[in-house]
Image (cartoon, rainbow, N blue to C red):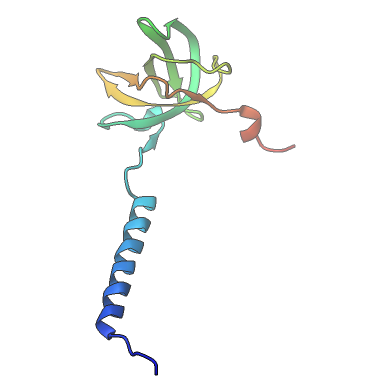
Length: 129
């Protein structure tokens, strides 16, 4: 003889599963992400962001003492922002390279979070010939 379960238990179990599914969907799409911006989009933005751009000019300073200083420009634009970075510098970092770095805008300069500098490989992003 089969025992018949309570429909209330099924409703509660399905409700809990639905709430968990909505929570997982929300956190994967909108939860806690760091916005990615270009130098032209940085003005007036507060809080931590990922800044992407191309290194222009000659980097100066020390990445561990007073900080490595360089300029980032929009990849396809003219807006630039000075960056102050402390931490490890990738081997591929140099003038003309596209990079991404996390940080905040303070007094007109982008102050990077230590050890967040990442270079992009240009051959990976260039169109195939």
